[in-house]
Length: 161
Image (cartoon, rainbow, N blue to C red; front, side):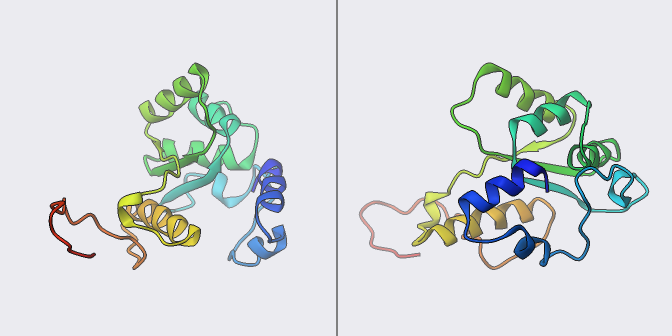
């Protein structure tokens, strides 16, 4: 977790950094570029950066990394593993868009956390769960929280999903 992510976490959610790190099996400090995940010999399915700041996106897109987060992402790309970047800035300027294109060209998946209203979420939690479930789909990790698209329902029917 980057320093900025720690600040964002405490401002946007009613949790502490220690609450989040307690969920992890292993925690590395962001400046520990010698951590196991900084090497391609460390096997993973890939990596998700959520949320992904524009700074992290730009570092990853350029290959010039300054932290363990962006170094590990660089390693995931060089090993041809899946990298998902959940960018969440808005609005976007041309520099942001160019970084997204560059990241995509080198193998990353840019996945803004856009809600899927077709799932008819009844709460913010359901919106978040659906988005995260779709991200996990990219790694072939199944969950029961994704509402799958069933096709168009004719307007004159009263089918419920």
